[in-house]
Length: 213
Image 1 (cartoon, rainbow, N blue to C red):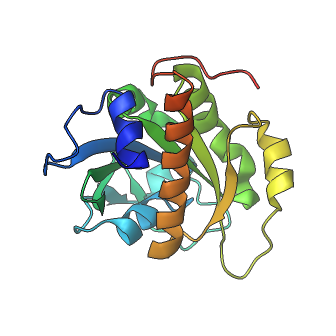
Image 2: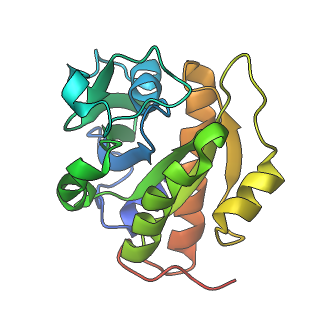
Image 3: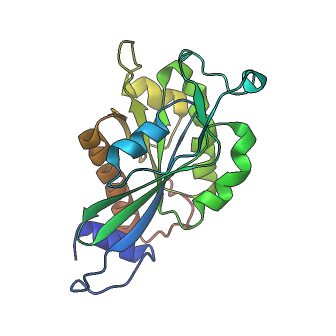
């Protein structure tokens, strides 16, 4: 059994024998603040045209859906994003992007159901926007990786500064990612799968509390 298959099996995602040609489905959440690149990230990695639920931003919502430094952003995700990618012959990854606005927070519990892990995308220009996702994942005990999206043309905080600001546990990886780049997104997903594998080997399930380190 491959390491990734072991991860999924230990988490209850499937118990197929190694010879079973049916790949195991793995669900993850892609989260973060408004305009951080969740839709872009899922689109870059997905093997299929991603499902998006973006709607045009209106004048009435301008005070709520504040694009900040990204003042050219004209749309916003109002429900979810969805994409699918085949990791290898044993795993198919299903990616669900959460809406970035507080007013759609009621959807998070439904989106999180059955998820094995999460990715928290971070824009260092709006660092506090990621706290909602981090707090939520910690509260429900969902393993996650913090990924600092490298926006072109401006300074991004170093990883040590991001770790200090987010105050995540030492075992939570804090890495960089280019949400536009497929290879960069692949490396990010593999980092999350490694987190799941370590957690599985420690005897924790998706509903177990995060271990103290």
